[in-house]
Length: 557
Ligand SMILES: [Zn+2]
Image: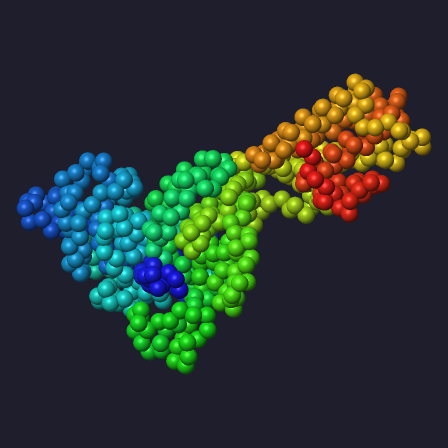
């Protein structure tokens, strides 16, 4: 509503993948690709330039599979490096049947070797052309409707299904001698994941947020280093993206999501006077928008909406109390793949509505991939079920194994075998820890020592100093979110210093060493608790002097 009142919200054309059979826009992730055999037609577009005299230069040949979209042509594009078209750049040609004059433009993305090296540009029906169209401020002309049939812009072919129209158009072009040649090609086409019919790229009326002002706000807080990014280079990556940002399409034709709180007066044409923004109906005669909000729009508001922002039922002193208390929070963590979708949006929206950052530290962790570097996915069947690992090795061991891969911003490549090996290693570490606890606590000498902690004995001083060093390093690693280094420190200390050296040496003078043994063990458990929460709590509870939970202990200094 704030957006709307400030004129930041508008409805406009947007390019979407559309399934004519399911009658909905679909997301890229719902599109599959199939290999099809089609014909690649070489169509002559006559030049509009009367000054050119030779026959060879009187037309430009355009290669296309999709004859039916020629009615949405707004330009012909060639590669600027393509010498054969050098003289034609800036000239214009005539689109067959409809006699529209369109310019010949250049774009680096045109493949010189594909077809004739000249492409027709249909921003209404191709993602790549939409991009080229935007760059060159070209018009957008739709020819395919949402039911997959051609509209009035197709003239005599109106009402035909796209594929049927292609055949008819080909025959007509041949009659007019505008077909240079055609050849068979195999290529991939997008199909709907659900019904397998070929999808169309087309233009749909969608809701947009103007983002320029929002992006400026976000850039300013990031540039002022109000948010600490880990790894640091993400600061620059986000700023670069925000500088290039386009208006944000926030409506989706899906079943799941927050329904758009826009109401239209029945039988009225769409204009801003005849719409209301509210959660409930403004009264009889109003209908609500059928679409839902982009899930990332909802997620972008998450930092403030979850804390009560916008809740009109709260008033007075207690109004949005949680928001005042917890916003902005200290720490946010996610995988880098949603840095734009989610993180940048949270920063934009929080800055705009709260004039503040949403969080103080932003940590991008690495992701686990398979040995070939691919993401785990259901369709590839390359996933590793963490529940299987947990059942086999125990949850604490699996946590530790995963921490070894948590290098900030860097992905790890794993197989089940590799993970098994690391899990096994940490299960053994857990067993070691249990044995240490058994030795220190269960096999405690009956004769109690009056000796106080920190005796003058050399061995005790050494292990206390080592514990202090380890604590310092672990704390520093945690501050830098280098969890893989932190567990390495604790692991080495426990296994190689505490167990192998101190405990071995203490066996000959057990009574004297007991206070130090207990002290070091307790500190180790507290240090390790964030990483192995279950085992450390269990062992901690065996101490006589203890708190209700290890979590109530102070972190070692
Ligand atoms: Zn479908």
